[in-house]
Length: 64
Image 1 (cartoon, rainbow, N blue to C red):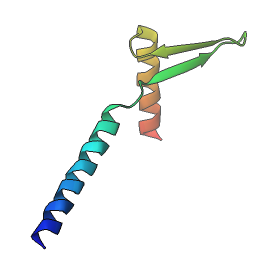
Image 2: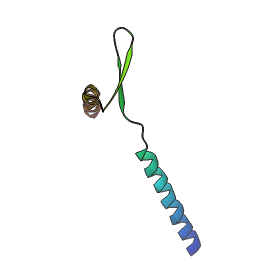
Image 3: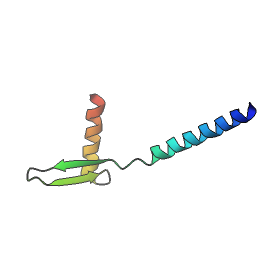
Image 4: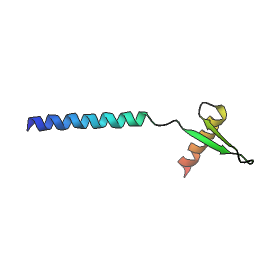
């Protein structure tokens, strides 16, 4: 019985470690801007305009 409990705790710890690792490896957040001429620009939060658009998008999602 004790061995089963230890095995369960080890497996539970491994599952938590995997979930935490997957959570840290999320892809970076980006915003895609479609222009009137049909072109596409993808901006990340490392660009000033991208950071502004992402902040606005977060505000809109929070308000919804």
